[in-house]
Image (tube, rainbow, N blue to C red; front, top):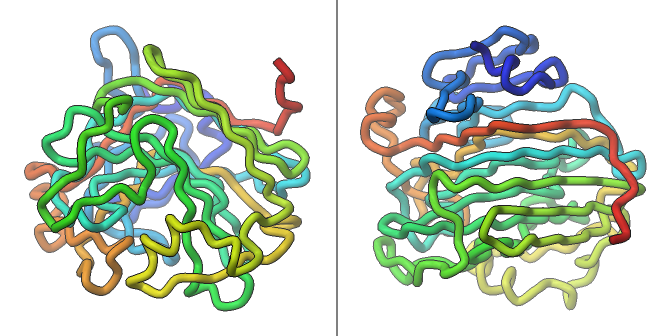
Length: 313
């Protein structure tokens, strides 16, 4: 059985795997240890697995086994992506002071022009020793001017947002009370309609959460608009940019889905937000898999298509 047998939308995507393999044709395609089908005794799932260190895209230092949408669109015309998933593993090594440590992105919107920033990344993060992790979503500003000043504003869904970190490399904050455990299912829907992004998150036993974000008009176009979360989290690396007033208006976008590992072996002292100092075993993928230096995400349902008018209920 192939991933395309479980999720029949695979003809809409290409893929980049954690070892650098790319494929444009995903019908009847699989790759052992990265992209394959697993059955949990009841259901077939598509597995996306990637190490902390491998071969990745030109715009990132983080590995991924992740779908990239072939169809491109602008916020004004919109698009919709959904996924029902469970995160099975995140890296067990990293620096607890680094916001990106122990996390994976399971869905995103990526710009394909301009700064190539990301108006949406949906994260799962769990600290070592905790039973429950957090689901949160980040909005990256479409920076006005110097893109090295860019930052992500993080919003909690269940558990904490990205800014909740440890006081030292090996001390962890309190475990979130309303978090999501490894192996616990949740569903997200991203619906971009006429320039507005509507997000819906559901999980059995948890409150359904909905969010709305305008992609055509910035909330962060002046220095005074920069949230305190950003001033605190990014102070050490000097990222305090502002966004262009029309945000992502007219800019070509596409969806991504799978496992975009946010952990890497880079030195935290160089970037205390994104360089996680995780164990990479010099890029040896088998050793990383054997020692917890990887991320693994399972999807059982997913869909992609055009944006639709949101329900008024």
